[in-house]
Length: 575
Image 1 (cartoon, rainbow, N blue to C red):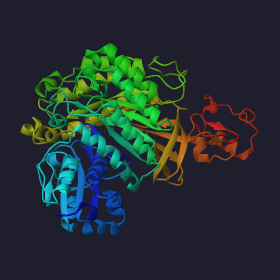
Image 2: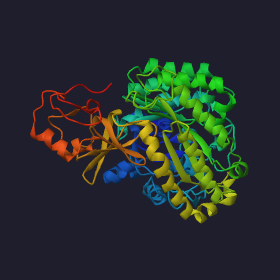
Image 3: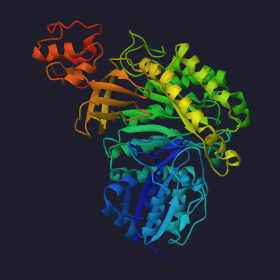
Image 4: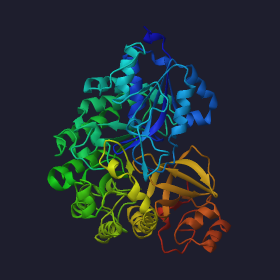
């Protein structure tokens, strides 16, 4: 019998991306935290638990020694929705196999990888269940398997799901492991689970494979936030659920009282938090229970931080596709949900609360508190050329009628065993690949660019932009949060720093910004000419005539109010 106190355990985080769970840096998912908590609960000392991300292994090959020498290797990962990632690169199947081959001790694989593995982490693909040469694959919860495996002396386990009491303990006990994440403490956002499962059964989605919705009581989530805060985490997202508005209810109808207890409790134990965002909202909930939903949205907007996004799974505006894939919301219903979220939560700091949507010249220059985002999925059963036009018509309607979307997420289906899409596979997605690319470009040009300018007009201040990488003489960075804006800043600045930025221009899915406030007496020509209305001649005059005592004394003739961007003296950071 292996004594848990003598075990050395290495956890490798290959990252996860599920319909209701995200864990690619700067996000850290629940999986490694709960697994670490389960290990501690089973008797493994904290100091004998090592945590690495897959990027950490790539960057420092010496860390592979921890994989080789561990008595128990736990790999956690899996992508069940395709995406493009900036902060990290998910593990590819060949890398996961190499982990199993390298491990000298017992190896266990868990997470959404149990649903299937494709040739690569991308859309328009089929998947199949594979063990990737691991000794054990957790077909239930990885953390429950780890707990049982350690208790059995590494002999085995019965596949099972953990219960509420267990996850309450493990979430609290495993919070310490975030200190071993490469992004800790400043550039790390913790994904929080409020529930699992879904009341609906869309053809492509893996979330129903977790069963009907089951909710964690508010006090257990709050206790997890409290523990994470003790280990330096200041950024949180309530992302692990199919529908935050349904939290604490019957799985479908909103429960504003539960939301109030959850959000106020989080604010009470983490008063200095810097990000509090969410992810999924089911638009059918907003339409079926509009008044309860409005109250829930108001509660969220009262407690969250600006720039929050409620991802709406419209998936398709085509009624034929909706019917054949058991989608639960029509285009008209989704439009109504967009309207309600805009009105209840689309106001900006500085506005009177509950007075959305807020945009135009008189709107405060901060991001709105909470806006909807639209998910569109292609390659579903019944898809036809008309499907693409119907999706475009829906998006045009939202824009033309004066509402805001934080982002439009367009992707192609992945087919997993256990879902209805497994029967169709990726055949339709592959057939429509050319059409998909043309349509995606059209959405970016016709919708994303003008919508982004409505959401973040010139002069919008983005506090705490983390500088991530350089490209073609530009520094790119993002805030922490749900679907944060990618910001390009002229010049190559020191990476790893955090600065406040004012938006000056817009691309399809990114913005150009300058440091805020920009010092008129120190700004570069590239920074000055990036400001709307400041051309080479005006920028040259600014540089030649330095120093300037004040903005008015500079006597600059521009159509735009330069006070939104520049100052002649250094000031504190944006609130």
